[in-house]
Every structure is written in C-alpha cells, then in structure tokens.
Image (cartoon, rainbow, N blue to C red; front, top):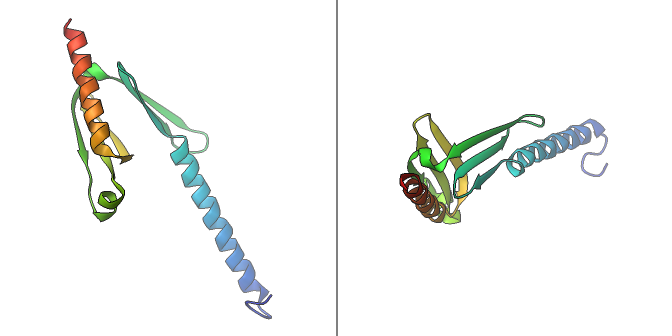
Amino acid sequence: MVAWPGQTEMFWVFLGAVVVGVLGMLYAYILWYFSIYIVTNERLRQISQKGLFKKTVIDLGLDRVQSISYERAGIKSGLFNYGTILVQTAVGDLTISKVPHPEEIYNKLQNLVGKAGKNEED
C-alpha cells in the first residue's frame, strides 16, 4: 500500500467509504431515473419510484386543475435553468421538482389546461 505504508486498515476504511458513497449515488439515480411525469391532452400522470420495490402513481385529469405556478429559487436554479412547478387541484397539490426550463413547461401546461376546460364546456 503506497498511500499508507503499514496501515492497511486505513485503506480498507477509505475503500469502504467510497463503496458506500457509490451505492448511495446509485440508489438516488435509480429513484430519479424511474420517477416520470406524463402529460397528455386529457391528464397528467406522475409515476414516482419511492424505493427499490415501491412505486406510486397519481393520475390527474386536466379538467380538475385549478391553477399552475412555477418557481426558480436560488442562484443554482437560475444558472442551470430549472425550477419547481406546482399544480393545484381541489383535492391537493402536485409538486414537480427539478424541472428543466420551467417557464416553457408552465406555458405548455397552461395551454393544455385551457384547452381541456374548453372541451369540457362543449
């Protein structure tokens, strides 16, 4: 061992810390990768991975949406252009975090909700 001559315990502690860190990052990546949002002209569906073996699905009709807002808070979100979109309904709020280009997504959602409201009146 070049880094710690005569102290192999330190090498194994360091290696263990690296392995735990990599496993933690892999777990966070899996949760992020398998959590998705699907928007159609009729509904908004959130599929969230809550753990390795737990998945939650929320299905929301666009005609049920009362208001939509977005927020970009902090220097990092301004530099990298991401934010949070909040969809408010009568039964509760749906928060979509870390959305890239939140203003564009907000405008598209507003247009879809407006069209869904017009289709319901016809």
